[in-house]
Length: 188
Image 1 (cartoon, one colour):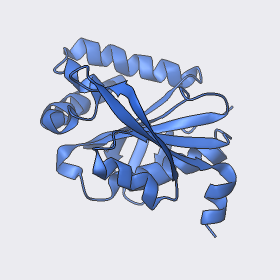
Image 2: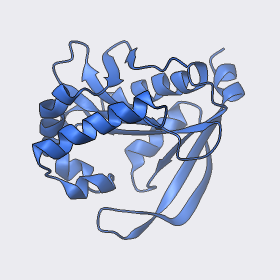
Image 3: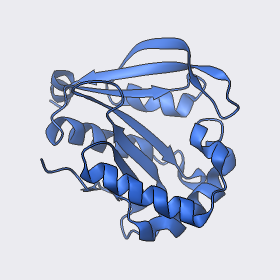
Image 4: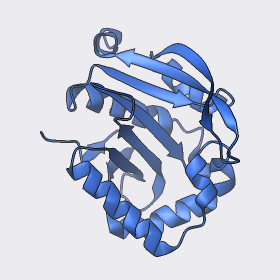
């Protein structure tokens, strides 16, 4: 099966990371750490050594190649700046993918997360041929929760104490879902 290693939108390049992206990733995370910590549990491990990040980027590529997980960097059109990160994750069960995303603090409220989420939803249905796409987020993350709503996802539930935050405290999780047939009906 051919996977979408590179996706181009109107303003962005969404592509599988290369180990050479490590300096862009390190800078983007360090510059955004206070913005990311409340919403991204992995941010509590920052800062990390450079070699740890290089190894992680290699792991992302390996998982991509093995059809296990699809983690992307979000770059400007010239690929000089890392705008954020995103992914299509198979952790929600058979024939489904979960979209995750984060945006560099200097690039929030510019519509990038909506743009990449729309592109990843299309890739999930057209390339990966899944039947369901979900987005999970903390109900307190109003910005993140607004994205699936804009794109026609349905808020199916808010599950109590289902995730852990960066302080290792239990938090609620909103579940937003769109099905293959709903996505293509909404485009007409």
